[in-house]
Length: 161
Image (tube, rainbow, N blue to C red; front, side, top):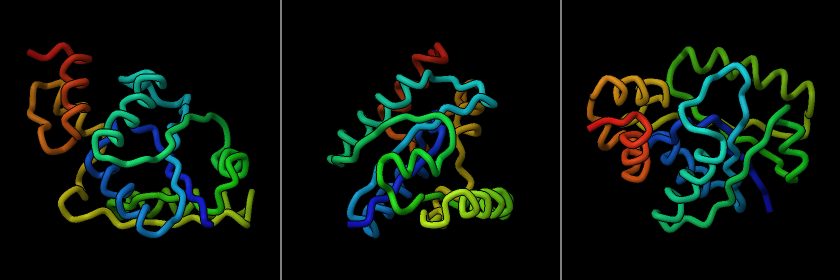
């Protein structure tokens, strides 16, 4: 049984992330969504809020997928949960450059954990958590870019009327 982990900051989770989750479930028998603590980022939502948000979104969609959090090296976390693969999404050429470096470093650290990439669906290829937060914070409508639960939480967090 091949177990994969889909890591990310998910601040917030978008429909692009959800698309990758659905597609990864078609390939892997087990999938864990893992929220990473990234000290170089200042998240809008706390770690606890992000984990719960993802659980609520997945539950709302009828998906029984474990959600956890971790800090430190991704490959060490993957090894801890006995995952053989790491799922990542690619949207643009700039993603490829970063992911290429990340993949080579992860292979150096833990060669038996495979990096598996999914190209974003064309409907969400431009979508990022940062863009969603920026548009929402400026009063723009992000309906359809994030799940309804996330939309509500964004409005509450940003105190948008």
